[in-house]
Length: 307
Image (cartoon, rainbow, N blue to C red; front, side, top):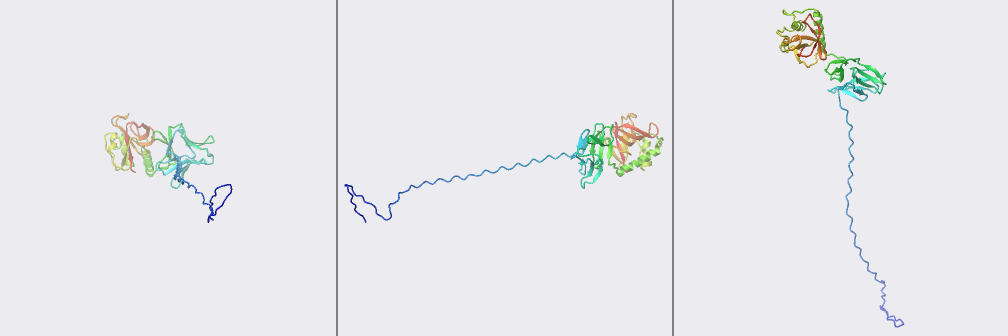
């Protein structure tokens, strides 16, 4: 319904909306939607650096003059079957690797401590020190010993640079070397101070053939010159070793041309012991059978009896 309203003052009338719904709301401006932010990739965490492994001590079977072996260090045989170490109680022990069974020890656990160390000195003596004092020694001072080595047989040796053994523990002999000792003892006891004749001669070859026939039970070997024995000896009875080999008691040493006492014929003699650059032998010519010490110069090699 429209109502006419008259107002005074000549004012013109206004038409009012009398709709029960009330006045229409003013239009609202629509807001522009904001763009969604771009999804960002989270940075990947940096991998933690792997710890650098501690370097393992280099395995060695030997130490040289003036070097020390302290607690926590050890010698290991080249085949890995034995090791030797200074223990925290001051005892130096050789053990078998597979079961750690002790083979030999200095027995210094009651007189030495954690500060103990083993050293091969420049005078050739192997000494275990603790508390500033020597607690044990090999008694090899005054020799040319320079190397302490643990062998593949579990034996600890004090060696010279030329391979001569001045001291070893534990003392071991294999069956063949024991037999060689016995046959050599027989040769010496039978011939000491005697001129040995064999097949008409009493030269150095005659003493060899006495050893070969009467001690070892082999057949006579006929040669003109001593140096020819190295090639003439049958392989069935003799192992032929080079001059650089380490001889043992009972071996036969053979010198070639240039040997000072007979530069043409050479010489032959039975080994009593190795002596570094020399060898102690049982020999004759000159004189009756006796022990002598000869240089290794001009050696052809050694014959080792197959016992």
